[in-house]
Figure 1 (cartoon, rainbow, N blue to C red):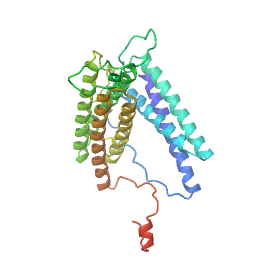
Figure 2: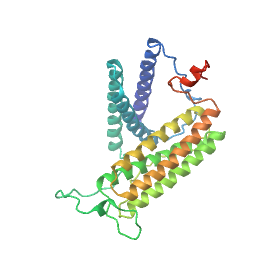
Figure 3: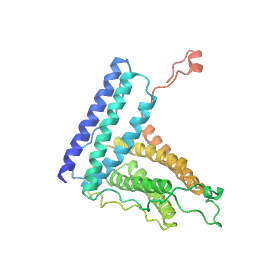
Figure 4: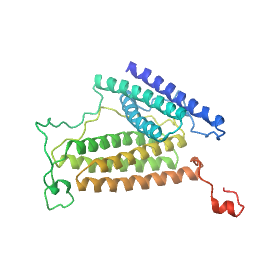
Amino acid sequence: MGSLVGFVQITGNLLSTFVERRFFYCPKEEHPRAKGREKPQRNQAPDLYTDTFKLTFMLHMGRVGMVVHTGNLAVASRRDIQDFYGHALHQVQNLYRAASETALEKGLFFKRPYIPYPKQFSFVNDVGYLKGINPLKNHRILNAIEITHLSLNIETNQIGIMLTSSFMQSSQSQVSQYMKRGKEISKKHIDILSKTLMKDDIPSPISPNHAITDSTTPVFSDKLMMFQVSLLNSAGFGNYATAAAASQRSDLTLNYERLSAEVGQYAQDGAEIMIKNKWLEEPPAAPDRDQLGKGLKRK
């Protein structure tokens, strides 16, 4: 996949530019510079991923990047910071669009469920439209918004399985067991979400033939792998929250809350591993007034 090499290079250059521009503000504002994460351990190691997975992962991270930059832009008040995140959002959007076009052209885009176009609009006439928890009563068929979120969360969990599997086979520390647990959680969530679709005779999204290789050569540091999974945990948690808010059937909302709780516990356990190994940097915090009042320095 020749065009993929160009995408990877563009993505790397784009991320380097983001990091350099962010660090530009640190000395200017007299802020301490974050230590950041390590680079890959081996640049000449055997390939751990197939080209199809690389492209699919870039699409997923493009979605995450657009959400993150949009959120940062929405809370920024200074013009220069708004310009920074606005430019970053534009660049990620262009990259995502190009990657999407390549995936569609090569038949590698996730194929989501199809429903026919409605012939006319209608109003909800019964409160039963919102119900779905009672197993003794028939619930209504899923609507387009609910199908979209179920499909998207199945896709992200499929990516999670592939990524944690690759990290699991290339790590020889406790991180490997953490990745194995993450893979099992993703499998479980896919099963729950897929069954919800199948109950209404709606097929699960069909993933492209992406996979990982059988290489066990360490490529990434444990710190970098843990950081990447923590980022995906945050994105998954946000996806579930958005899906719960958008879904109008009560059983779906309850399911997303249950799945979110499991992701939250997994993320907390990961944070504890990072803290134990001194990998988790502390963000700026407000002064501890009680400690200042006692004349003690905050540790």
